[in-house]
View (tube, rainbow, N blue to C red):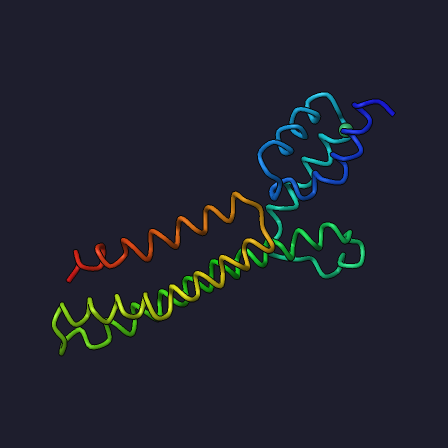
Amino acid sequence: MDAYKKIHLLSQELIPVINDLDHEPEQIILDHIKDCEDCRKLYANTVNFDENIPEPDYANDVEVKPLKKLVQFNTGLKLLLIALRAIILFYIFYSSFSYYDVESAAMILASFQGAIFLFYMPAAVFLLVFTITFFNKKWVWTSFITDLMIIIFLDNIVQLFL
Ligand SMILES: [Zn+2]
């Protein structure tokens, strides 16, 4: 089996999960796609499929390949990780600002900082471990840097509005 055929076989397996690959393997597949009609078609289907993910078609569920189910599961997990952070932040904002009329700005800020420290930080650590287990380096760094910015800078932004 020559190198082209080997790359073709691997591409056929990996194209459905191309969004979760690291940069180098992704680039190898994208290079291969340029010369390979089959893989180009598969890639086009995958891109279409990704755009259609939010509404799973249960009528065709039996025909969905296991790998595609994995991709759906994967996307669902990512949305869940983002939603969890949003809910925690909403709760922190809500609880800090609920006494806006009766408390001083310093109290609100202190309550906000306390809540970030008590609720958001442990959640971020837990979600980071979860992300390391299930996702690639790109996602680990993205979520790590996002959480770091939220923990370090969000109270400064909140302060501007008090
Ligand atoms: Zn190919």
